[in-house]
Image 1 (cartoon, rainbow, N blue to C red):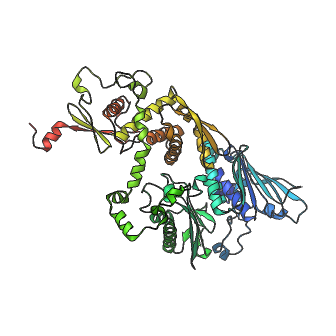
Image 2 (cartoon, rainbow, N blue to C red):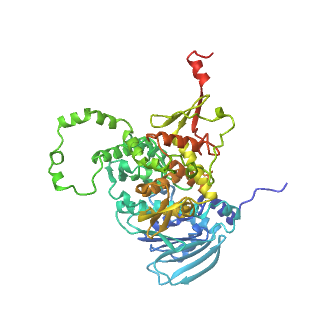
Length: 617
């Protein structure tokens, strides 16, 4: 019989290796940026077109390569970082496995320009499908420019699996941020389709964090510094008030390499226990430096997962360092303005609190109320939602309820539950009762309905927004004094992606340059004092839904808006508001659940209550 086992060709082997290393454009961005850092560059520029599908180019001013090294760099397992097996356990550089450039050359058209400082001319190499097409001397500055074009041009099936441009660009931004955050002493820039997304000047770690995550962190960072014989922990955590409902602003670096670790994340979260609500996530950028012999970084193709020799010790150090840092600053909010001189002279301001004062304050009922777990969180929620009552404006002088304006349909609404038999209506004409400022009791001939006011309003808003998207847009009310909103660069990508749908839903946002937008108008029924806050919360909610891939962009936006703008528990409602809420709920196509499947109301039959009390006849 003929032998059937054969060695793969270099080209096919490289394409298989590329499947591990280069999964999407962002994977190539990560490898190229890390190589530029290892080259000792002080300036690194990233240029992408069509979210990296058409072009990914990294230009650095590092030490460059010789002609021989430039050719060798594209061979499999070619590396300058490892000479013996022992070197594998003493790695301090970023790239080291020697497969990145070979993998890129197997799935893209690559152009390399490089020159060392001691060389008079540089070298230009053009590679396609792992084959060198051209090699010639070239005039070039010291450093390296590597451009990969038409990613997966020879593997159409892989290219078809790539996501939309905004989605792929977000992945590229994530990888860019992870490298740029680790090296604040290096200038980084990111240019997408001719537009500069990031321009990060050299500076301190705190300056780099603010440049990337936004100016709102400028006065809200707590320094973490713990040095021990075993490891060092340096970086910043956000004050508790900066915690968000979504993950995203959490960065762990081990020996300057970004890693993902649910275990260490738990150490930080536990240090914030009792300071933030359980469903919130604090911001942190933490660097752990320890002997490379104490960890294994080659356990995952992307090198983002590592193993510690003793992870319990690392956990304990991280938890202790963050806890200690938080204890160093006052948890109470600081004033961003100078106090009036007359106020500063008051005893309460210029004299320290005594032990007697402290005991008196802590024993008061007000202190006890706020000291209860998460109480402040609930108070804040209530204050944000006082505008809900304005959602239902008076429609006529006779006091009739205007269902049409707030119904899910554009035409005059007729309740779907109205039938010939009066007793078949979901409720009778008796007054409604609100319980715990969260539920509405609705009596009917069968018993009663218990309506959750937030879930009900969420369903109403969702269908209203969904009808606006597919039909008539929601009216926009012009703002007399337009507001400017500055977003983090990564969030600008999301906002630009959502702009068309936001316009349909009543928002008028216009780009103003440098990650800033001008808010010219809001939905007509929105309270103007909360417009910026509403947009920021909408963005956070959208990012929360974005973790679920089964939803479309539009569906995520609709769910985000309906959840973010719905009335919350703690909001007191009048009789008119309760009746309006219940009536419009039963005009919905699906009145019994929220978009996420939570019930909007429960039905309780009178005969069941009679049976419970032994009164069933």
